[in-house]
Each structure stands twice: as structure tokens, then as C-alpha cells.
Length: 99
Image: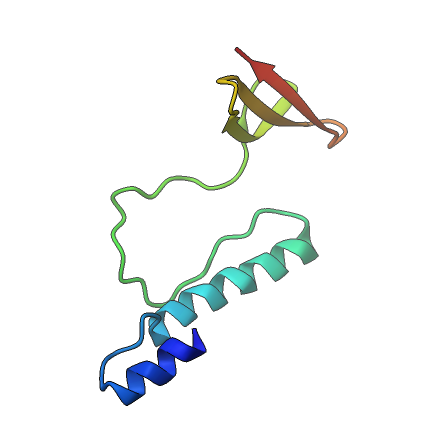
């Protein structure tokens, strides 16, 4: 990253990462720290957004069933789907595999 920045200065071109890129990363880190303190999903707050809203979706757990939140769904190398679930009552994390 620093080498690219120095090369960009020498070659009179913009660097690969812009100030705006750093702004976005900083906003993500701020939300992460806030989430660690509150123990909840926290939104990423951006005063300036240059992206589109077309593919925006709700981030965070969704309801899996009456007893669980779906935290993550992941496709495994063997073709199975792994679900990471959180019990609504106890907060216990569990895994479930689906063929």
C-alpha cells in the first residue's frame, strides 16, 4: 500500500486506494468497535456514500425458526450447507449441516 502511494507520487498518478477508501474502512472499524461495546449489530454510518443502493440488503441475523436466529450460511467444499445458529433464549451458538 505504501509502496503504491510512493510510486503514484513519483509517476504523477492517483494511488490504488483513495482517501474515500480509507474513509469507508474507518467507518467499518468504528462500527466494529461500537458493536463490541454494545454486543449488538451496529450500522455503518456514512455521511457520504458514493455507491449504489441496488444490492443493499439487511445485514445481521435473520429469523431461522421460532427458537433460533440465522447468523451465517456457508457452502462447504463437500457441497453441504453449514448454518450457524444462535438460540434466541440462551444466546448459545450451534451449527447445523444440510445436504
